[in-house]
Image 1 (spheres, rainbow, N blue to C red):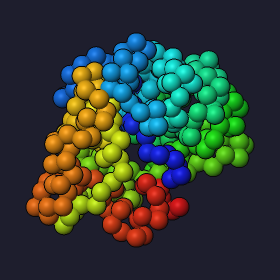
Image 2: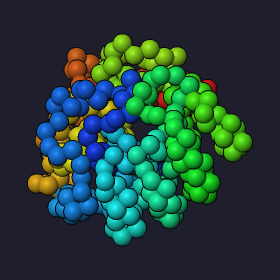
Image 3: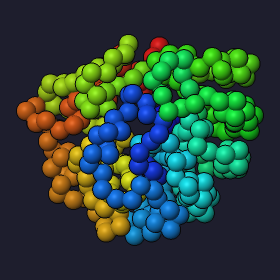
Image 4: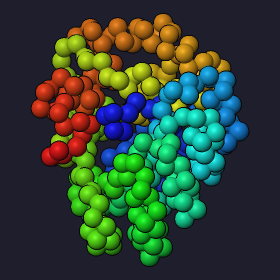
Length: 292
């Protein structure tokens, strides 16, 4: 998300992503996750309401899979952003959404701080993303109707856009920033890339704003952050307790306190963000953006 907007509660609407990017530890999540694969509109409403998630909390539909793998994705976004009153952000590869879903994102533009298309890249690191003629037409439609959204971004990781969409992108005049890869808090220790940093880092660990937002799965479990693919730790379950209670629990307090201990080994010790926040040169680059 943009630095001038609140970090959002990361929402995973569906568990198990078919895009199969080699820089996402899907197998790690699938090995530990227990619960339904999808939110429905009804279960999402119940989770938000029983959990008393504050309307002031931005919702980030950029979770551990493409949101449109969830059949109720657009219904959930419309309810949470336009009816309940959250602001939010969305990231999608477009493969699983329809033209109507794209049009709905344009209708929600006043409630979206970021609208991101994770573009197919000119390499084989997204094997489940098929750049068919139908996909190309969908890509053209998205550029046409979404370029009026605030902070509309076309993004690739580590390389250039796929050749099938390169000319469309070039003619659009929309910049495509190249983002660096990271090892998801140590869960991808063999990952290579020009900006990849592998932990562990030594000494006390700087606090990260993501720790105070969490990530949410269809099970209702509330985890640490967007890098919590191993579900360690879980703060609680929003079908059973409130968002406020999860962040005022002894478990959460003990975890935050552990960051001060140079001998502790929480997942944050292995996270790329712990390096970015301690090094001035990295801090000025933002999240993991290369050359910006």
